[in-house]
Amino acid sequence: MTVMKHFLTITAVSIFLSACSSNSTNTQFIIEPPSESQIENSVKAQVSLALNAFTPVAGQALPNNSVLEAYESRGYEPIWIKDKAINPSIYKLIDILEESYTHGLNPVHYHTETIKEYLALTQATPQQLAEMDVITTIALTSYAHDLSNGRYEPQLIDPNWQLDAPSNTWKDLLYLDSATNMVNYLPLLAPRSPQYQVLQKWLVYYQDLAAKEKDIQVDSGDLLRPGDEGPRVAQLRARLVQLGDIRFSTRKVNEEQFDLRLKEALIRFQRRHHISADGSAGENTIKMLNIPLETRAKQVAYNLERWRWLPSELESNRVWVDLTNYTVNLHLNGELTSMKTIIGKPERKTPVFKGLMTYMVTNPTWKIPHRIARESLLPKLKEDPNYLGKYGYKVYSSWSIGAKELDPTKIDWNKISEKQLRYRFEQTPDEDNALGDYKFMFPNKNDIYLHDTPAKHLFRERDRAFSAGCIRLEDPAEFAEKITKGSSRFKEMTSSLKNKSNTVISLPVQIPVYLVYFTVVPNANGMPEFRNDVYERDILMEEAMGYSPFAPDESI
Image (cartoon, rainbow, N blue to C red; front, side, top):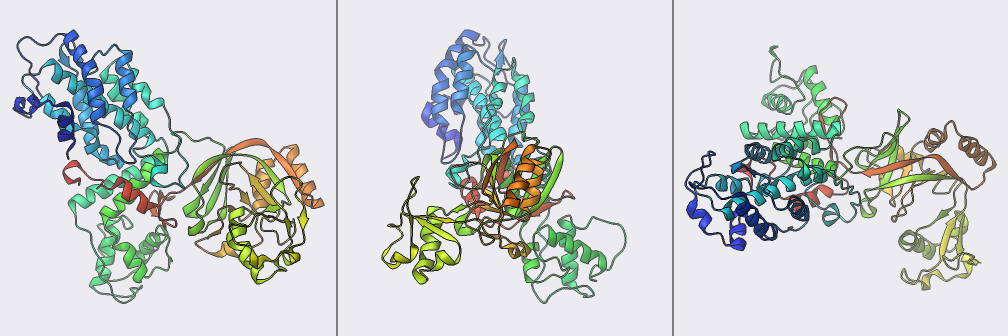
């Protein structure tokens, strides 16, 4: 059912369609236009009806209450009609809404066709003018909200996505003194991150390119390498030009020869797609090359929505755990420290959320989470009752304070099921401790933290989803030094490490921690970097958003 049919069914304004006569934007009213009081009374009557017509659907978050509050605050005075004339800014608003696809949003959500049909009326009743005013305000408000906070509720898409930092500042535009100022305020609501702005430009590039050209495909076949010649090499070159990895040049080249310039361009492509950058086009590289432009546009659109779920402005001091890049970036006092990380396995996804790092622990004792004890530790104990003693674990009768330590060799582990397991397991601080020498805490309901690890060899892997959910750091000593530098906490830390003491150290400055998940980001050269969707979260985005991020006439 279309938006227009939906609205007309609920409000029963069948008179509306019979009154439509042209698509002209020059609106003419009846000889004696309705009075402002007539329109205001109609607005008051139509607000609730119109808001009921545009109720939230699935995971969408529609800010209808804000519309009602805005009209109440102005005594139901129309927003778009003043001195018996329609504010011309309504046409600018329509243009903005129709181009919402350039942000990865769907223009059909903003009712522009409905608004234009009202504007085409040559004889408009007070009710029809009120309907137009309210629907236009709903469209303005929905777009302001979506551009600022995102169109969809993240946790309705993915329960493991817990980072939703909505801002209410977008509501301010409803209280500006004119419709013109409201419309002009809209562009300021988009995320201010340079990454968002670069991604938006690439979205537009893919949209325009897909509308003008067909995808250039590279035929499958034998490995293409430097020195090869033939039509498949020409296809490879043309595709890399189309994707922006080779800048157009007037310099003459042999299109069918795999030369050094083509190899360098292919390496750039491979690096930004996180595949082996060997400068040869094998099966995996060709598969990546042949992904359609429309699919790439959708992927960019999903990540623009993810940016809108973040605060519009990020703290200058922060820990940025980039899950799909397996890195952590510490922004502190104007300095950037980056290092590799290990994240949760696909079956134990590291959730996306925000925390506040308040303290660290040296020589930590590892209290094994109940889930890990059930799923991992118990099977090992059933195979080897001496497993706890071999690896420095202790077992206690319960999780209560003062629980009695037990002898694990006197427990028949084979008689205990996962559901019956009630013991608390701890691994003492030593060189085999799973947490290593450091644990960095930002208390959260997920019991996730950053920590050291004795399994250093795993950092040599390119894809590093190996943990039970927590984040392992490649160089925790450097991280600890940075967050305690110049304070008495640094001396306390070094002393505790030297003495091998289990010590809790409060941080001199509390630091926001973001665990984020992006499958497309701009690289250092401003090119889009497409990453492996390790947790298959793009599939969930596609199911929720489920539209083509292109111009209105191409929407489905």
